[in-house]
Length: 95
Image: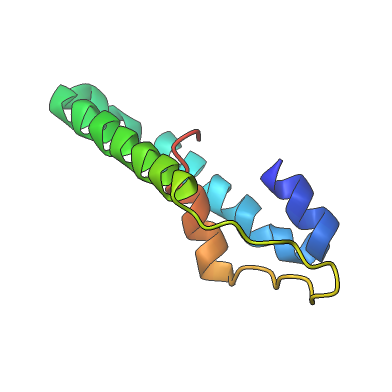
């Protein structure tokens, strides 16, 4: 959904960082980063706790966010910078 929305709003070239970030994560797993979790089960627990805390923080931010009226006359948002889009994929808890 993120890639579809990015492509629809900003075009193909601006969604490339998101695709590259996902490929970097898949390559890390393919080259053995996932085997570290199998060798050290405590690392898996740490990642689960960190991911849960991150999701709780996101839920808190959404719950306490101020209501903002959508003004259709405003300029559309700008695409994320390359580094930010790639990093977003690496910290994506669903991926």
